[in-house]
Image 1 (cartoon, rainbow, N blue to C red):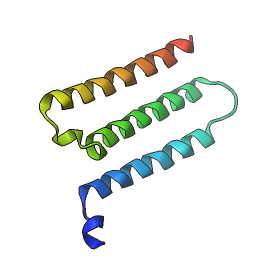
Image 2: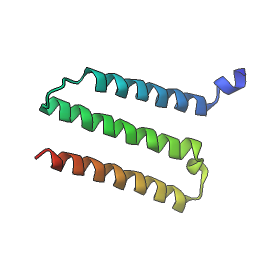
Image 3: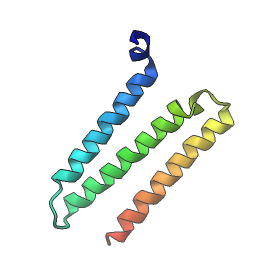
Length: 94
């Protein structure tokens, strides 16, 4: 049990769990009415979600130890998907 606690994957899991709790806290403290700070908070929550996705892909799908082309594809997919979602959300606010 002690060896399990000391693995890097456990630290990554704790980071993901903490990020989830922080995102939840952010979403519950947002005011009900629409405002620019609401939009910024939503974009921050989306960014945190994509960071969590990257951590899951790299650590729990073992892509970090995969051949370089697969790692590049994984990173590119994450970057493109994150950028697309953030841009679509940001443009929907206008």
